[in-house]
Amino acid sequence: MAEAKVGIIGGSGLYKLEGMTNVREVKLKTPFGDPSDAFILGDIAGVKVAFLPRHGIGHRISPTELPSRANIYAMKSLGVERIISVNAVGSLKEKVKPLDAVVPDQIIDRTNGRISTFFTGGLVAHVAFADPFCPVLSSVLYEAAHKTGIRVHDGGIYIAMEGPQFSTRAESELYRSWGADVIGMTILPEAKLAREAEICYASLSFVTDYDCWNEIYDQVTTDMIIANLQKNVDVAKKILRLVIDHLPQIRDCICANALQNALVTSPKHITGQLKKDLKLIIGKYIK
Image (cartoon, rainbow, N blue to C red):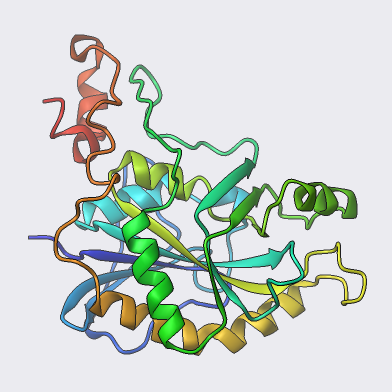
């Protein structure tokens, strides 16, 4: 029996989730190392939930060093079918204001050096990623946010930058010229790994600042980001509870069978160790 059906990955400022019953803490090991921290398991609205603070309690792990493969694999091992990611972002458009929420529908990858796949060492898979977020989960997330009265944007392009430094002004203007809406450091490789693991993934991105392109506003600082994110922590928790209470029972989205036609390596060339390590992910396709 699954330990959890819904996973929540908390970003900067969101390190715990109140309102859970039957709460317990579990520490997990994976073939890809240790996750960011212990998982908090419990029930919300009768649904089994797993909560993970992305950066660890105390915000110890930088975006570049996040053990994303371990985090997503651990979610899969718990039985998680849907992941809601909470992210802090900067705005690249005047209309997307600090303290707004965005449910993005596209990503431009500007990261470098992050391992973004489970399939290495002799096993190759090419999953479709044209639509990087689960459309069903994103729709439920947007409707839940809208019900709280918060100003929320349906869709948008998320620039995933490497960090941990913030953008230069030239970079910020470049991304604006591309039509991007928000910029952050943590959506990737999570979204790619979740798709490989056939887990639905959507983001609730909270705008904390105007990056550095808007000279009318103060330069972005960590204090500014944390202060603005803290203002939205309570509404984030309210949105998450609403989402969990309105999820469809059946998954008929693109995510549920993402690996069906993606594995290209002949099974006879896949080592026993790889099959063992990735059984959770490839087990229904390769024995």
